[in-house]
Image (tube, rainbow, N blue to C red; front, side, top):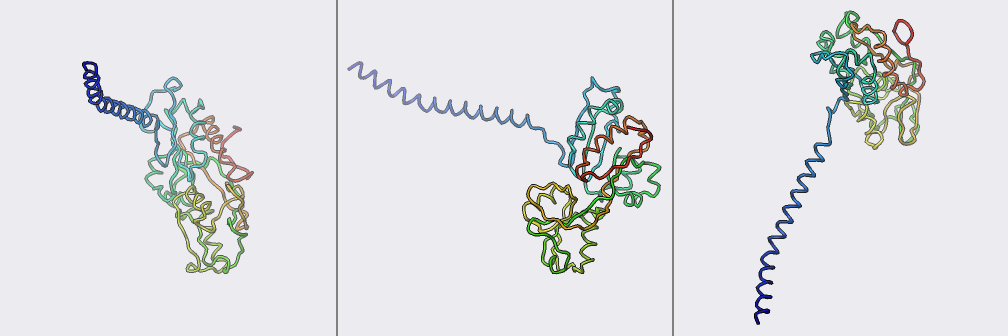
Length: 292
């Protein structure tokens, strides 16, 4: 009987302990999840949506300067190769001698202001010369032309069928355009082409984008029917093309006039040449005295 009573009491005691043990296990699980979430979030470092950056380790720097202008700043119009350009430049001795890091950013060209140019907020700028001189007539007192590509072909692009240059073909089509009015490839040329075939604004459905990456993504998802691009358009699937212009100016890059170091200019040109596949073999023209 005593054994039976002890057994019953032990059972009641175990029953009493069971929720305590379970709640303790729950606390441990919650603690583990909390710690894991802290470790996961700390491992992810999100940069600015419009920027790729890299820092030059202090051991490689030739200067401890960390004030304004201590970083090499490039303003592009597309995120293409931005991370690779930043990484390459951070490894170059000419950059390490003058800067503490590299920032490659991209924004619509229309967001650039006269103040940005006068204050030399960017060391390298990808833009149209006529647009920059419109903002600052004496631009060449502040910036030099460093590199440019010209005479490349631009096409109408479609995933459904080969574009036909008639008003009937374009009628009812959703056409992707950049909101950047200075973009030849993705704004000016397609609008000029539509006027040439007498396609009225009411006949098409223009869809505007702030940058080329979202324009491309929308095209591949079938959210737009047509857009324009070069021969080296990054095709994730078969794309139908019709020539729009065979002598467009692809890109012009400007460099801050004060950055006269020959090796630095050559290293920046090397980094910008990472973008060359966008124009598929179009010859570049540099404005650097002497060979790089």
